Each structure stands twice: as C-alpha cells, then as structure tokens.
Image 1: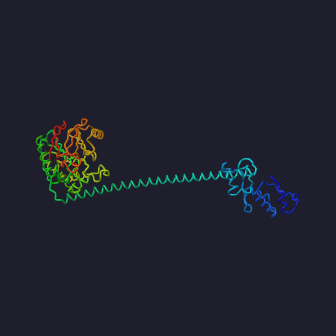
Image 2: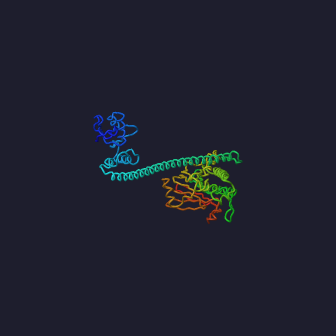
Image 3: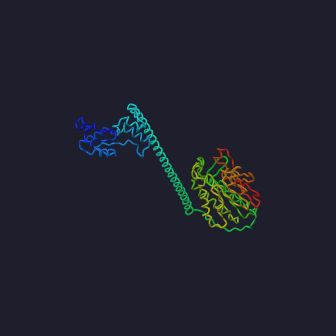
Length: 461
C-alpha cells in the first residue's frame, strides 16, 4: 500500500501537499502509471476518487484505459496463467505498465531483480512461441489426417458405386444377350423351312437294361480338311445317320426298350480360338440353330425304336460367349440348345429333356438302376483328385463319371469309380494337329443293368 500525496502536491503547485485536507489523502493499491494519471485527472475534476479506484479494481474502463487483474483466474491452468502474464508484458502489451520485477512473482512465484526478471521473461516468450508453433503443426497434421480419412471413405463409397453399377450393367448385358438369342431362335423356328417331326407311338417289350448313348463334342459349324479328317455340317449329318443305325442295331441285339442320350458338351464349334474362328463355316447363332435341329431330328428318330428316350446334357468350353478369363462358368450357349429341344419336341410323349438332373452348369447326375452316373465335360475333371472332389460335392457314392473333351474313347477306373470318356465327331482338327493330339471320329454306347455297365461299344463314325 502507498500514500498518494506527492502527485497531489504537483497538481496544486504546492510544496505542502501533506497539509491537504484529509479527504484528498487517499490510500490505494499499487497501480500503473496510466491509472495514476487517471487518478490525478480525477482530483482536478473533483471526481470521487475512492469510487474511481473501486471501478478500476473491477476492470472498468477509465478514459479508455483498462486495469488488468494480475491474480490467476478460476478457469485458468498454471500454464495459461504464466503465458498470459508473459505475453501481456511482451506481446499484446496489456501489462506493459508493470515492471519486470513487479510481474516476476506472478509469472515465476517469487520476486527477482528487474534485470534478471527481464531476461527470464524473454526466455519464457521464446519457449512459449515454440510450444504454440508445435501445437499449430500438430493441429494441422491432425486436420490433414482427418481429411485423408474422409477422402479414403469417399473413395471407398465411390468404388462401391462403381462395382454396383458394373454388376447391374453385367446383368443387363446377360439378360439382353439371352433374350436376343432366344428371339433369333424363336424366329428361326417360326419362319424357317423346318421338316415336320411326327410322333409315332412305339411299343417294345420291357427288359432289364437301358442303353447309355454318348453324343459328345459334335463341334457343329467347324470345317476341317486335313490328312486325317474331313468334317463340315454336311458330314456331321451323315455321321448322325450312321450313328443312329448303329444304336438301333445294338438295341435290337440286347432287346433294350429305354435309351438315355447324354451330351457332355461342345455341341457347337464356337469362337474360342483364332484357328477355330478361321475354320468355322457358320457364325455362332447359326451353329446353335443347326445343331439344335440336328439333335431334335436325332431324338425324334430314336423315339421310334424305344419306349422312352431321355436327353441330359452339360455345357462344354466351346460354347462360352466371352474369352476364358472373362466368361462366367455358367454362361454357355448349350442352354439354348435345351430350350430349342423342349420347344421342338414338345409333342413327343416318350421324349424327356431332363434339366432336373443338372446339378449346375458344369455337371449332371442321373440314377440308373440305383447307381449314380455323373456327367462332366472333362476340362476340369478326370484326375483322381477331381473325382474325389466330385464325390465330396455330390455327397453320395459315384458309380461312373461320364466325360468328353479329349476326342477319343477311353475306359478306366480311378479309386473304385469308373471313368468313361467318349470321343468326338471331328477327330483330328487343326487345334489337335498343333498339339499332336490324335483321335478318330467315334462315340460310345453302353448297356446298363442293375449291376452297372455290362458291356460297351466303340462306334466309329
């Protein structure tokens, strides 16, 4: 505390300031020079000085000047309080009226000499600046990290939208392609010059065996003329007639009254290799139409010699629409052949186009006298491992695996399962020559009873 009388004497121009009336002898806390000047101004104007001091202590403005409280605020941490004192003195100048020694006890908890306190204040200022800059850098890094996270989330959502759109477009393309091919085949049946297929009731005495007839790897539409094979759609038709006569002969020999025709795929040549595209005489749609009609007439003729004729098939690799890497495994043109056969042979009571036995696009399973026969194309199966996998997938014992693909007849047994592979109508084509694969045009007919396959015939075409 101090007695403010010296300034009073100066104001009145008197040396005997201590003799002023007692009401002008004012006790006040230690304040800065600006506040002291304000108090002097107040004496001249005869302002109530005690009231002025009360207002200044409560942080009120006096002639535009503000008295800052030095004590620590309730909501301040020690660090915030220290920074406010240091910055008030050196940065924002709100405490510039105070001496360094006066502020030292607030900033550092004890009093120091003016020179020491000044050096300490400048050191603290530098330290506080570094801390503030580091905090800004960290804040910027956190902000950038949040932006990166949001960008990643946006990219993920964008990719999801792209994938959904691609999947939707794929479905549209598949449906459009399927509908277009169906329309083409429908128009072909309605407007084409097709022979009329008449159903003739057949009655043969029942017996205890069934013929299992292969119809594999027709490759309709392919044209081959080399040292081993001459093949084209006209030759294919002649082979069908020859094969039909041989089937009827075998049926008569064994008194067979039932016939199961199984097709393990590659009924059309397709466009899967460049050499095949060059060798094809007809485009894929014409191939589907041609082979569908050929099989229809083949089954219609068989129906005249058996009490029942059943047809079951699986897709091959030549009927895929896109290239191998991009084509879905279940998108094959073979489905159109089955659709054509159902429509063309709908009036035949003793012909059944069996699609119920199709496990999926890659295999079928038929039960003949209590034994399970599984049909596959042969490009994915045939090894001991794959046969074991087939049994695991079907979850039942397999008696025989029927396949094609390799263009020659073969009988084998793998892990107790019969492996029956039938040949092709083509024999040796350009693709086989390049890979030194030999096979003559042939198919296979098997006689099945409750004991299984009792005999088989290699039918050369």
